[in-house]
Image (cartoon, rainbow, N blue to C red; front, side):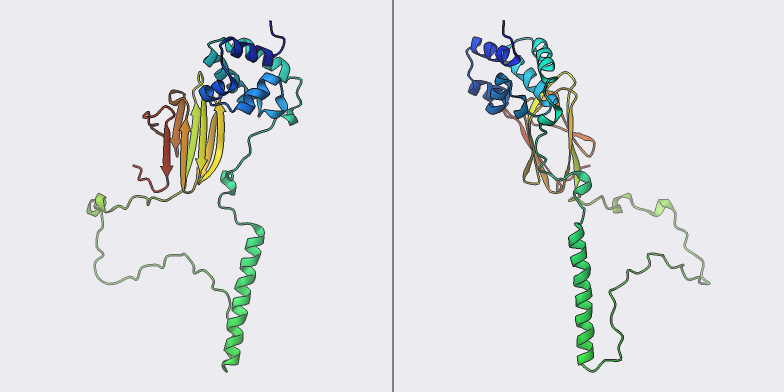
Length: 258
């Protein structure tokens, strides 16, 4: 019987007559991750939740029980320091950083306004209008609504019946939206998520896990196992197309939603 998790995985794979390339193609787990698993190189793997998803996918493809493998992984990974297990690189800004203005940019913007104001004032001085005061940056007008003028005529009565529901303008398309991906408790699936042209995530999510991103332009998803995945746009489920071996779907801020 194999002594380590890597030995158990490699023995099961060879016994089924499968190569690492076969496993990568079938499970969507990268070959280097499979190599790291079979060699016990846990410092080259992401956090434990992802590794458990790899093991479950690996075992399901070979039609073996994943429980002994997960138990063996728990025993071996307990000896690995937490700082050695790396999270996947975050390539898309977090939601609270999406619309943040950098401090340096704000300072430069204020400086530019002051310079423009000084130039305008200097031109006024050269043109013989020295008595004019130096222009100041425009101050936003008060948003307070002036009180309506009282007239002697009888006020018109406006009721809710006079409003035409068809005149109400729906929210314009083009607003950013929140994309959420959830995995069923008893499932696992490989995913590749591209947000605004950048790959935000690629790997396998285990049962019960979820991911969330803020989309300002468009999002494209490739889903390994659609039956285990729920895709939500601003909290509303979105249907995954089932017209390909690995379904792909694209959501855009210009899409019209009800």
